[in-house]
Every structure is written in C-alpha cells, then in structure tokens.
Length: 479
Image (cartoon, rainbow, N blue to C red; front, side, top):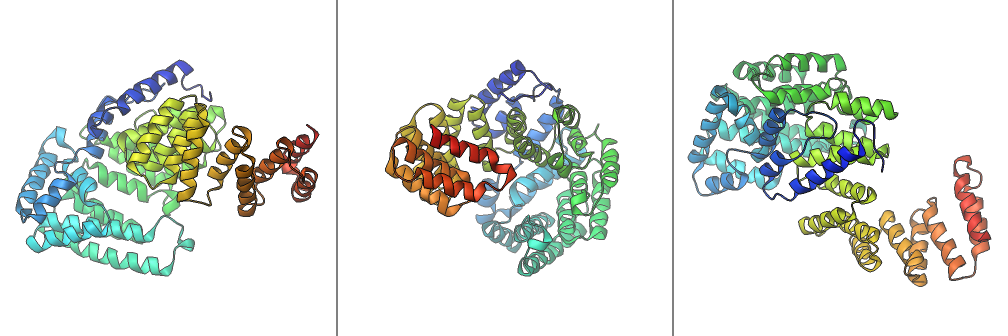
C-alpha cells in the first residue's frame, strides 16, 4: 500500500473503517457530521461542523422553495429567508445561514431554475430576496456558458452568451442591493459575476458593502480569495492579505479558518507541486492541518492520484465527498483507488451505488467491473465492461480491461482478437492493443506473431523512452 509518513498504515486503516461506516448514513448532514477527520492531523470539530452545515443544511430545501413558488406562496418563502437573514446577522451560531441557503438552493444554472426564478419575480417583483436569487441563477448560467477552459480555447459565442447573462444578473443584483443593503448573498453573487468579467472595481465595491453588513462573511472572503489566485490574474501576496484579514473575524465565524489552506497560492499550488515524499508530507501536515474548502480538496485529490499516492488520494477525496457527496467523478476515482488499495468489496458497494445513481454513466460500470475483477469474478466483470462499452464504444481503458479478461482469464480468443484490433485502430501508438494481439498469437496459438513483433519494433524501437515496451514484446516471442 502506498502511504506517506504523515500517517501510519494503522491510522489509515482506522480512517478507512470509520469513513466506510459514516458512508452508510443516508442523511447527508448527519453523514458529514459523523465523518472521521483525516489521519495524522487534528481538524477542528468546530470548523468541520460549521462546514457540514454550510454545505448541506439550507433553511429551506430546493424542493420546498419550488413548492412554495409554484403554489403562489412566495411571501412565505421570503418570510423564512428574512428569518434566516436576521439570525445570520444577530446570532453567533447562525453565521452564513442565509448565504448557505442561497448557495445550495438558488445558485444553480439550469433552465428549470431560471423558469422558477422568473415565476418568483412575477409574484414578488420588488422582493430583494427574489432579485438576489434570480441574479445568482443568472451568474451560474453565465459560468456554465463560460466553461472551465482557458480563454484561448473558449469560443467568442460562449463569451457573448456569458456577458449577456451577466448583464441580466447584475441588473437584478444591483436592484436587490438597493432594496436591502444587508442581504449578503447579493454581494457574493456580485463578486462571482465580477470575477467572470475581470471587473475588479465591481468586485471590490460589492465586497466592501457586503462586509459592512457582515464583517465575518465566509462566502465573501472565500470569493475574494478565489478570484485573487494567480491563475485568474491575481497573486499569492494578495491572497495572503485577504486570508489574514479574514482570520481577524474567525472567532465570530469558524468557517473563515477554511481559507488557511489557500495561503500558499490555492488550487494551482497543490496541483503543480513537484512533490517528493517530504514535500508531500509537508503539504499534508501544514497546508491541510485545518479543514479545507471542497475546491482545495478536489485539487489535492487529483494531484495525489497523479503522483500515484493512492492513500492520500483516498483521504482527500473522502473528505471532499464528506462535504459534497454529489461529486460523481471524485467518487468514481476514489472507488478505483480503494480497489487498488485492497478494498474491492467497498469498491463493489460503491459501484452498485454509482450505477443506481447514474445508470447511463459508463465509468460507474467500469468501477463495478474492476471490483468484480479484483474479487476474481471475471464473468460479472466482463458483463460490466461490456455494458460500459455499449455506453461508450471508444473508451480505450475499458477495451483494454475487457481484452485482458478475454485473453488472460477466459481465453476467449476471438473476442480478444476483436478487442485488440479495435484498440490498435483507435490508438495505434498505445502498446496495449499490440500486446493483446501478441499474447493471443502466442497462447492460442495464432499465426503472425513474428510480424506483430517486427511491426511493433518498427513503430516504437527508435524511441529511447519506449525500449522497455520493445523488450517486453520480444520476450513474448521468446517464451
């Protein structure tokens, strides 16, 4: 098992046991509250409890808000939101209560949400709560149009659509701020809109007004830190100044301590770390000494996996899923890591859950197939890989996994031959199809092995970095 000195194997196994037990709790909030802290560090229970509520505990659910609006009871929804605002501004135990409700319920960029916001505004055209929610939904739609690619890879049409939606959003948000200057979700959405357009003046104005209403606002400080990252044109020194300012209010709002994980540069620092084992341990022990926001856990999980540190990948992703259980791709990636770390039955349970949650997602079938493969059940593994290929016929990872079963387990040579040829057609510079074909020719046996070896050497032999492949192919012929 791959591990780091930051925690022992025993600590890691204890964490896995506790995490799996917590994963069995159906209610997302109670699951989050019951989750273990990472092994080898001491996360504050005060911070993790506050973050569980921030991510998973709105004062009104999306379903309840929809029912109230669709049945003509927007006034009741606004009454509940007004109570949450009052609590947020006056009760120490209610910090960010209104903000989290807006983030969970209204900051969603679907056409369905847009239609609901328009219905709400028709009922209450002068409601700052409706206008703030509508503006947040417009900004979420704009972000969806913008996507996550670099500017050079984003079309002008996408930018035009984004700018149009942002203008609509800013119109609603500006009016909401005039009607109720203490409605802090308005300013959070304003800063997000400003970040998408690179409008620093608008962002700083929104932040100033928002912090005047709530000096310990986590979402406002968090958004300022996010838009100050170097990858968005900011710099580490600016991030550190904002984080230091936020910590002056951490006694009033423990959520602000989440920002400490971003003090060295945020996501890019974690993703780009040229980490040797000592640096990996230092990053884990110090940067993640306190609980971190989901975007940092997300980056850390991907980075640890890319460095083949599966134990850390599982820890980071487990904590990410603790706070954001809907993150399907990270749940799938964690399941693959768990299988590789000797937890195939947990991986199988995850595969079953993932398929139930997203029956058209081919990766969910890959997860379950890989778990069956690790448990020695080649028949069910092949069934799942075949289903994954029906959903995505060009997935070379799945083709290779299925070909391995056909060739090395069930010896279904004809099916293996089809898979090998398909792999070589899709990715001729990937050795997996070549090796499948050579193994069939050797084991069945089937004619043409010498020609396969010659063609392989001709394709890869001049590349010094691929000599190991060439030696392995030649070894097949000699066996």
